[in-house]
Length: 149
Image 1: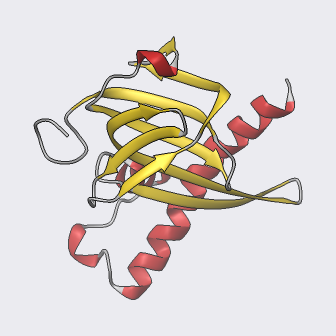
Image 2: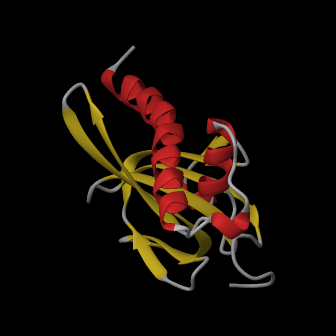
């Protein structure tokens, strides 16, 4: 297994742990008390990284190396030469640079940036300030308000 595959697998495992840390911090400050706290790691991941997420930052230490992942989710406004322009759930417009070697999927199938269509819900994952190496397009309409972006 190559380093990139190990890093992705470790990232996926760490998402649940990161969500747990966020949940504990939110619970301690009373921010999420009125929402009903999820009770297990899977529910935490779904709660914090589900359709209501606008963006997240997950900091992990993998084999002694600090990794700072940025996850953005929003409706695609445009696929531009400098990246994907997303309208995030909170109304923020974010241009996410995309690596030429990024793994792009549309509805779970391998695709390219050229296959992305305005209005699709897109999730990007990038390491720090690097271009996104993962782009997932899920469909149309959510997150955000129904209708055209």
